[in-house]
Length: 350
Image (tube, rainbow, N blue to C red; front, side):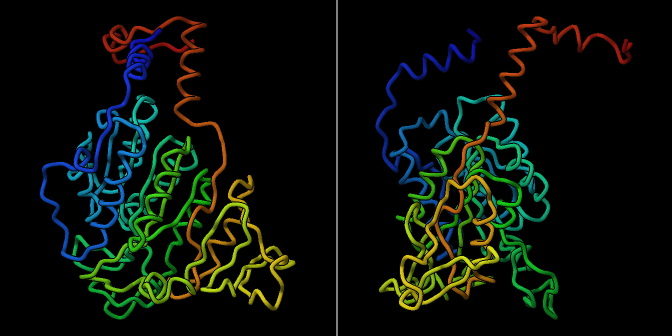
């Protein structure tokens, strides 16, 4: 048995101690702008952790650069505030070499989808066993209000005084296009929903991607108010519930159907009958239908799906990598790292 395997066996032999939110909260003063949606997300995570049955010393929070990136300071766990956009790359190395750890990545729409876009999509396609929380406020908050990769077209900001021109990223579509095995969306105004989505994301073996609609009340206040405001949620948020017809509205009067061409549309339930409604299947292996659902709304001013879009099984990268290493060692024996490092700067390949 390897040293790591032996340590993991000993760790599992000791019961996980009961904890409270206070145990998972660091002694650092939480410093976001008053009213920022990040406070709500932090509270949801801190309240969830005691329920997961995990150890603080086996939990790591990694972040890049941005307002959301302060998150590791506020969790009483191991953590790393890394460099811009590189958190998924660092998390890849950690999760692959230390499968005994729970690795979380906290990132923002600018950090993850601009300079970090390449690292994000490869972490997802490789199916690294990490949980990625993307705080999407459709703006650069830390650097004072420039437009971001998720800002709507014609967004007027300090960096686009005449309005932005490019089409924004759809984080759900991007993750599904990268073949992520777990893809979900939640929002900062519903703690119960956030906690349940985070719970499911953590339980998934492989790369979990969660987009969180998060309000930046200083530089982009009310970006999601049209769908997340209490007076609008019933008619604007479309809950995705496994095995149930996709319907919404205070009386379930609206629903989603599939057209003959494979696309989806919103209809009045009474006009088509409940039997015609699309039944949600998050375990469907082909991501095509989930991709269609991710495009049901052109932006957060139209009825928008929320919940688990996709949850499928696929071999996890770290497990497969370590199995491959074990097979090579079994066939050829363990290598000598010291000898390799001292072997000189040239070698002969036969």
